[in-house]
Length: 68
Image 1 (cartoon, rainbow, N blue to C red):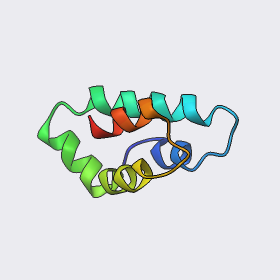
Image 2 (cartoon, rainbow, N blue to C red):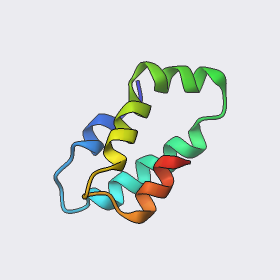
Image 3 (cartoon, rainbow, N blue to C red):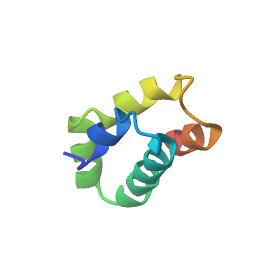
């Protein structure tokens, strides 16, 4: 599992955008090994991010991070 990922993605706090960008950056730098990618794949993180990419709630910066 990816700690805090689901909690931050579904968060309705005032700091949502900041928290989202933080977890996206963390995912970008944390995917170094094949094992890391398998964990993320099993947690459906990629699927969630791609569906979230189309949301009106996501900033341009977040969309760029999602595609990385």
